[in-house]
Length: 134
Image 1: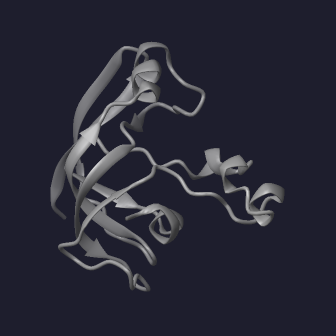
Image 2: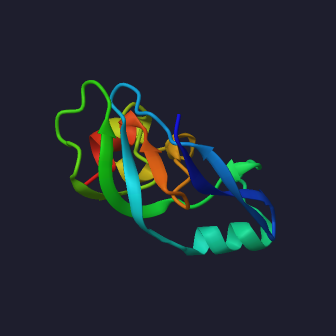
Image 3: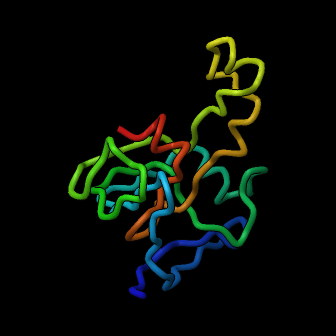
C-alpha cells in the first residue's frame, strides 16, 4: 500500500503531520487527490480551543477541491480525472425536517461530517458523493 501525508488534530493548539495509508474507496465512495484545502472559522476555533465535533486524534480539515483518483463500485456520476469540490456533510433525508424538504435543519447532520482534507488524498463517503460532491 502506498502512503501519503495527512495532518491530524491532537488537542487544542497541536497538529501533527503523519504518514498514513492512501485510502481506498468503498462502495459509493470516491478518493480525490487534494489540490486545495482551505481553513474556515470552524478549523480555526477548533485548533485554538477545541470543538465538540473534534474527537482527537483525528484527521484535520474539511473544505477542499481536488481531482478524483479512484471510484468505488456503484458510483456513476464521477470518474477518474474529474475535478470536484464538495461539502463536508450531507443531510440524512430521513429525519422529521429532511422528510419535509428542510434539509438545512437536519438533526443528524453532525453524524455525517467528514474530516481529513489537510492531506494528499481524501476519501469521500457515499452519502456526500450522492448529495454534496460537485
